[in-house]
Amino acid sequence: MPKRLLIFFLAIGFCAATASAQQAKKRVLVKHGPKAKEELVKPEPSTREDIMKTVDRPAPKEGLLARMLSAITIDTPNGPIIPFPVVDSSKDLGPSFGMMPVIAIKDKKTSELKSVIVPSVSYNENLRTTLTYRHYIFPDEKRYFILRASRSERVERELMSYYYTPSVFSSGFRLSLEAKHWITGKPSFYGFGINSRRGDKANYALQMTGGEVILDVPLGRELFINLNSSLYDKKIGEGPVSNGQIREIFPSDYARAADLDRFLTNRVSLVYDNTDHPYLPKVGTYASASVLYSNKKLGSDYEYRTYAFQVKNYFNYRNQGRFVTAVHYLLQFQRGDALPFYAMPQLGESTGLRMAGDGRFTGRGKFVFNIEERITLSKTPFLKFISETEIAPFLDVGTVFDRVSDFRASELKYGPGISARLVIRPQLVATVDFAYGSEGTNAIIKIGYPF
Image 1 (cartoon, rainbow, N blue to C red):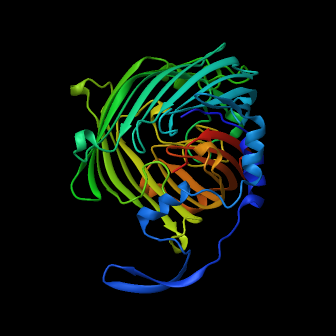
Image 2 (image 1 turned 90 degrees about the vertical axis):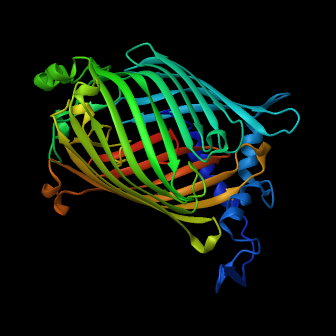
Image 3 (image 1 turned 135 degrees about the vertical axis):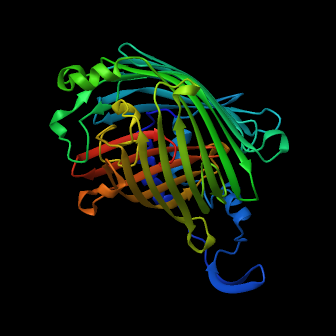
């Protein structure tokens, strides 16, 4: 998903808190299967299917959010255009700013949202000017396509296409396909282990070209076998940040990672999933146990295995959909050949610890625990485009290690923070995260939930 999106979202997200009107609650008897229990719920039905339908109901009144968006919206026969400023601040690359119009395209017959086009232009001191084109296509409530192209004056490039469907030919098989050529200059390397020093930060550019296929085969209503096959050619080069290159600070690690290596991997996972939505969940549990293997006889340059155990749980308070407690656990570790550092488990901004920069901690294994309380502040019928505002205080906990037996609770890193979000039905959520801890503070603007 795009790395930058709308600092403006933060302001309107907090302002929208005053726009939410609470409906009166009453005590009712809700029947679930053969048993019944008494609890406080809203007057509307509280089944899992009906929870998601609440986003389609108009808000009691227009509210501040809708008025602010109406003031900057340009209406066209095909749909609205909303010109947003782009502001970002990264531990790795520093501040960025620019402009990004969000162009919603509606079906002329049904007035339903069928696609969103998001071009942008931004400037960063290290990357210089970056032009990006994003196109999100929604054939229906579950399937979608993503097309993205980006080019910076310095280092960064991207061509990407992605497709997801929860039902292949009405079979119940879930399929996603991705192909991309990507060069990013954002991540840094600090050395190995949880005790690596911030002062050893070394920037680099990671290049990867290839694709992957993911297929979920149902074993039952909520149990799947997940098959993932990917082929990527990867290497590193000079990054865009001039003060601290990996070639200078870690010359031996640079020499090894600068060679083009082929990673042909296959992963098999046993997955339990009864969540209500693949990307915007409000209730349910997702759990998986997986093994990824890379074999030289199949064409990979390395022989290794990666084991992972993951649980994501979404608890919907009183089945109302307003308060959702989201919890995430992850244990991951590798066995086999020593790999270039970029192919090892990492803990940082996009990998479980939001207070730190990308690639901050690297090891042969890692443990991550995240918890956040997702609180819906308001719902708005604005053009049926932006439907919910949300705030989420969170806590990230994690560490890396060489072996699972080396895990020490005393080496856990803690990163509390808060998020402001706009949920854009049917598939997208725009997020502004602020996190802090032993690594200082960090501001993250991105598309998608962290888990």
